[in-house]
Image 1 (tube, one colour):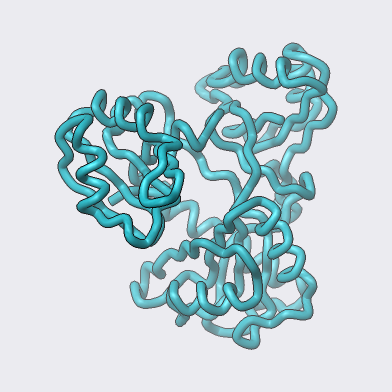
Image 2: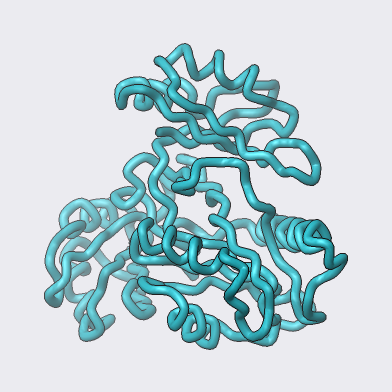
Length: 312
């Protein structure tokens, strides 16, 4: 299965299928649509009948100019671990959300929230829940989507998170920060520095719960450390080491968040309520027409090449 992103909004299956069929026999192509606007959501999932065809599609169609100035992003799809949850009270903080949804679902590892531009102490009315496995995320989605569960008295909206747009190769080629995950509690910043600095000078180490960011002075040393230490045991746990994604463009991120809020309002109105069920709520994406397993498009072999989230 491959993920195709950056699809022009006015393109449909009749143009995409012939393009991908050049690489091999297609079993299924699912173009994600926005039911409110009728246009596509900019990405699709293509399942080929064999692995070789999928790999050929990545080689031949990644960065393929589909229209003047418009290039597709094509890579192997990996299972989605992240859910979007909307219509939550804006007053709730990350720890409160983690505690509440941790009671309701199993395998929750992380909560991502974004501050309201008007009040940094409030969230935007939606959050993202990240789980330890796709199975855990899928079970959580099923449980939270029944309509029988209210969270803080609110009717929440649950969906698979949209694929994250990955930085291009040119941007990633300059990254000298490593993302290290699967760390144990007793694995300190000092211990990490000691293990990684044998490959080159380190500017700083920042550990957050079970993951950390290691800032190298030189990129080549960072890559060497990644190749040597990925999968190695540290403190009784096998760590995963990858290049960290650089912070995304602030203007682009703000546009994305505002789009999520608009789509949330449309969805709430589509329920017949006309407005959020609570004055403190707004949020994100519409439900998608797509595979039940909710895949996410990311770079081929993501865990070995690219880390989660922005580093600071």
